[in-house]
Length: 342
Length: 272
Image (tube, rainbow over all chains, first blue to last red; front, top):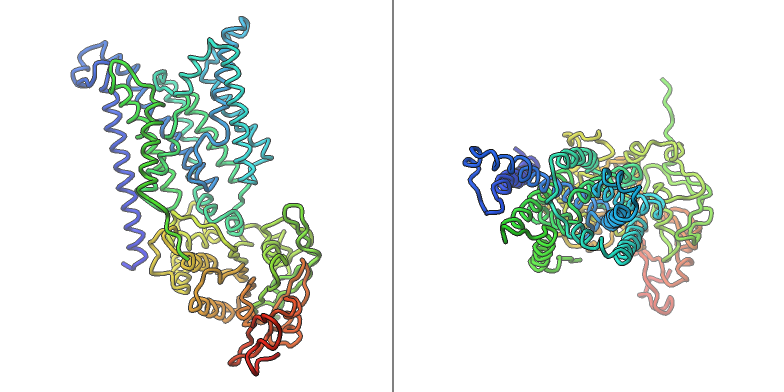
């Protein structure tokens, strides 16, 4: 076997080990998440004999654990796409204004539900979930409109920042003018997996497939982009079309996750960084591993949030923010200054 | 059997106008770069050399036409154009997480079918390119762990791996130490021996004078295009740098020496 084949084989094996660990971790955490209830850790085998316990597991804990994993996987995938697309390790899924858009959408929906009798019926059916999704997607579309497309990365980033700030301010204005919606909006902004049912799991699973397939297929574009836009273009990559597809996948993944769980902090930022500290290589493996890592992170945080002060619960967004922020600080100190010789 | 004559010109450009940030940089450039030759583009800072190279590679919007082997570049499908014309940029961004091997393999993108794994030919091309730039020993290291000069050699390998007929390079000697600058020269000689066309923007005038022809650019226009050994080319070169350099022969090579005060500063016997 020649040297090239050995190198390739070693790298593939390393990546496979990490992927296998993440899959195993996901399964173990899913079992743990399903087993943990308001009274702490329960025996899943014994619960099979009790109809009530079985129903709680089937209708509440199982969809919640699976939903938390799916939401995390969507955010991990979106974070990896964003960091590759914008060639910025600080990019996160909310960069295009989707977080502020979702908050604003929820705020408007809450106000309309409470104040407009004619709107209440259809809004109730529409639900806050849809409002959040519509808000997130509308914010991304507004960002694209202001950036005049996806051709210019810097313009896109700046437009995303502007949309995020403006919609964030409008969301705050809604809260100030209608203080009764403040609690609900705060709850949304802290993030929660408590309301995830089987339907939400199904939606997120479909969204994951719809986003992961194009993202993995376009992973070479992200590899090419890492050498700069001019080099990527010189390699014959039709950047505008491919970038538009990646932005669509980013927006859909973020919107789907935010709509079901609210604003979960740091998962989309930390998951790609964690993967990067374990394996290095092309985006094909990286996107997949970052998505798995996102699922593991959010599921672990959700399980911890339910177990730490049981029977009470911590908002999972608070936990991801504290743990994720702490981890990134630790990682930053571990890595130190990158070596740049001449 | 009738043989179709080869197009003697690799790149022909006419009426190239280009702007950067609303400021006109190129003002109607016409040129014809010979096939199988090495052309060095030189000129003072801000002359528009890099912009010209980008316009020739179709990387920036411009007016005018650029032909590659007699065919307008705009009629080439993007992949075919990328197979025939490779580009190495100035201060090319580099994916720190990608390994040296991965970066060089990106040069094979124009040759690979979508979603297909690299072929044996791709592996061979990458291996040859990494060996040619002496980056083979780091093939498994992330690019982020390399020094500036080492990175530059990897990025050169990426451009070589394309195995294009025409190679455009913008400041390829940046960050390279003198021995590796000499190695780069050998790489270019090897490309020329294979019949490939090389166009390079160089600030190291002495290295540029190793080329076959020199394209002197000033204020967005071509001031002169001629053989590097030609006395008129030397005079034009000194003129474009305000007589602050002198082109003199040293050990059988033309070199550019900086004048600090006038021709009297040059070593004895080196006055042009």
